[in-house]
Length: 266
Image 1 (cartoon, one colour):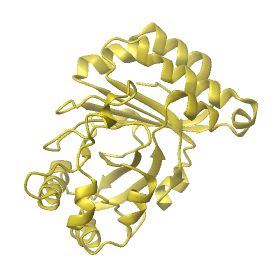
Image 2 (cartoon, helix red, strand yellow; image 1 turned 120 degrees about the vertical axis):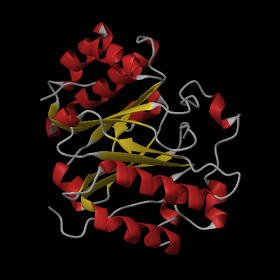
Image 3 (cartoon, helix red, strand yellow; image 1 turned 30 degrees about the vertical axis):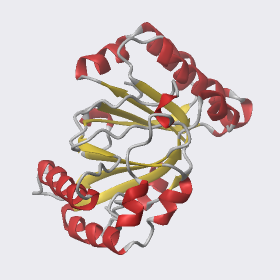
Image 4 (cartoon, helix red, strand yellow; image 1 turned 45 degrees about the vertical axis):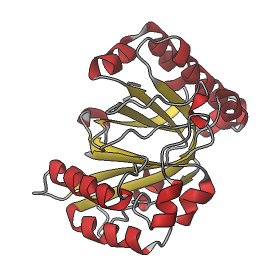
């Protein structure tokens, strides 16, 4: 973990719930696509760790943000138990809550079990990267963690476009109910024999989450595939069914690059 210290009609983005032609494009990637060393392994129920970072404007122009990204990406070779890590810029903010939060960068990592996440947080290489590069350059940070409650893993490969959704539920609504509703929706959308490339679950690290209780990622092969779901009738139907449970929703998109490409894009 990187340890740094109401909207009336929330916009829920569930791009995984689309018509059959699109669902076919959302199947798990081929073995060739997953052969890259920067691709995430197909862990059935990974621990998802997200940190949203609002970088100081001067860090963007001085190269400090690029150095931060490089230092975080380098942890993949230094920290045992770290199954996958991506650090890089946010592509676009997709909701009023995201615009209010204003993250410019994010870190996404995965672990097979909670003890692996705890070991990562305490590892000297991680602590050094935070102290040297994240803390001096971050105006704000928000973090969430969840155990994937989807039926299948959602592997991520370089070039993938990912939509992150964080949500707060309304008073009186159990987060477990939202998780179950999303699970049923993804099962209905995936179709027989197909696995939607999604991960979602209840946040288990509330102290750093700014009230967000639920997290979800949907993985696409490209930005064009992600954009193709906008306005899809089945997506809108799913949003309408879940909206009564929600108080606030934060949505953003990012693209997974190889480490060198991520640093060069800053």
